[in-house]
Length: 316
Ligand code: A3P
Image (cartoon, rainbow, N blue to C red):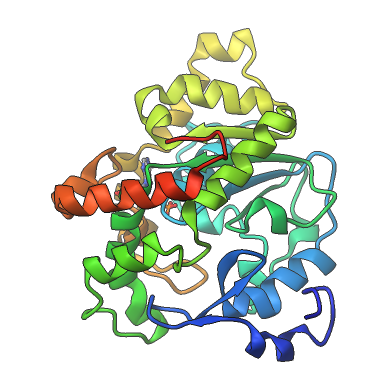
């Protein structure tokens, strides 16, 4: 099998193990992960071949439904605060969905969207769901957010049902139990989730200056503290004068779920990728899995994750 660098890869993808039960996309197993076919055939090679990294790039990485939208909003508002103070009434996050402020590396290419990465001002803030082991080489700093797998699973299942029609797939009959069984087998988009998390966690331990590992639940507990840590890591720490003016707090407020939910583009619009923007904003709490799954289902997920993490040194 060629690597995704090679031209022949797209045609050879047909040889890879296939999973079609988790809507909306067909997945192929590559390098230990289940990736959407289009990401594998086009997004990954494009991200590797056409992406010219800059030393001050910040790459936001996550497993889907782990807080990507929030992380994008916070990082964008922080990196661009000189041009767009959080109090500005025309702040981009008051006009556009966070996914249209921070492009996905790989997915943009996979969707045939012309992502003008070269035109973005430095420091660029980009995002990816790719596992650490499949990231393009030469990138600089990575901020990763991880989340309790049970909340990820429930959030993902609800999101899938909500947006599948955007891509012409009917996910109504896709039950949570079925989603859970596939999730536990690692056979979901970018899964296994625990392997995705463990790779980034390992990388953050090896090179703390290159990978910052955040937890969604800790961000909920202490959003301002988490933002300060992130700003410092991104090389744009809040100055004492900014702290005095409450800039970090203002960014947290601007990016809060309540505020983002009220933005018209997020209530009524679609993202540039064609997804209903309101689908990205739901409850935004820790532990909501128990409103949808039985304790027995929760235990099954915990056991699958614990099994998968054995020997990794990481635990949720
Ligand atoms: P729930 O479905 O549990 O509510 P992603 O952005 O990776 O797709 O993850 C989506 C999850 O993040 C959803 O979780 C969503 O509600 C939550 N979320 C979106 N914006 C948020 C914000 N500003 N603050 C906290 N959580 C947010």
